[in-house]
Image (cartoon, rainbow, N blue to C red; front, side, top):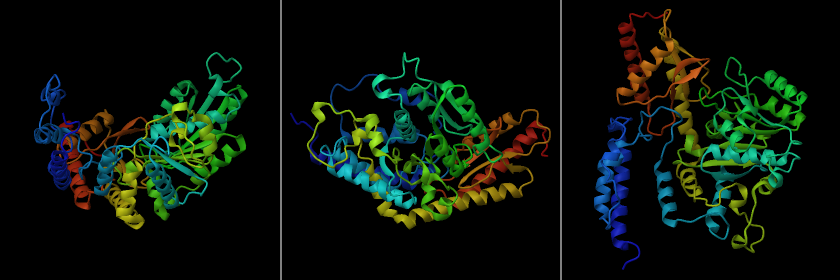
Length: 482
């Protein structure tokens, strides 16, 4: 019995898969961004039980083409303008495929020397591109949720309460540990607090200012209040590029405050950190170089297929002290090497750096900068059209390529419902997918430009769709513009 499939059969299927992928990337814009199916439609096409005997790869690929490809949400579509776009670029896809072929677990240097050393080098390349200090040492996790959790675990370990050995449960001598972040911060901060045993009640959501940036006076006041109540401030999470508006917290004065108070500073630059490779956008983020830890996701805006999240820390020894646990079966005798399993809770580690290496080399730093600048220019142009239209208004500043805006309605009975319906009509049209947000309690339309395949013609068509659909709704409601 053959153990794996014959190499020739696999080779033919890989060649066909390459054609399927290339054809998909070339023609993805022909699909509606959101598949026009109902829940359960895909499941009904799939057998309820697995096959008893193996099936030909060509038949499986036929079913992939018929059932799977048309029925995903097409993140690689030029009209995908929701959330934060994740582009699977050509070189990144090649890197992902090669990594799957190698199928290594980069938990130890010995278990994959090239994977370990390439990860260290790629993280250092990105550090240089972002103009971060040389003492920032990076490694790659799956998502920013994991990177933030790992960073905050290191912050907890730094406290003089020996959580690693004694835990938090049943220790009345340990005060409540408190985490601070803005009311615009990502929900992963809250989830990290839950997982780490701080409790959701000990996450302080600090008010933001008119530009949706964390208020420094409010942060200072809440920290002072917690200290007076006997609580122990553990970490501040500042954001460079918030999820809804991409606003940038005042990191420099927050870093000053954290230094005075002896509090860990984590910077969430998962989205906008990629833009920091452009000097003019790096200048919008003063102080991020003073963080104790910082996360940036190349899979969000550096055209690397999901998942790829880089966590930088200043004190790698502290990170190892928080996580390193070496059973006998994983002991090795190499000196002076990095074992990536020591830098977090994961033992299994995919060869994620291979796709990042391919992307950086294939596009080059200047090529990556050009693409980010082009997308920011498209965002600014859309913002200009909104500002020039008396029927619409910007809802937040536009520092990068994410644009938040609302319709100006004359005495609307339910403005949130109007914007929800408008968003639904835009998405139902097919060529575009946008995701709304809520700002100051009001539903807000939100467009994020971050896909390599999105051009000016797509943004022009989107704006035409928005204005036309808004006019249809206005007439249906008998509503006027203000």
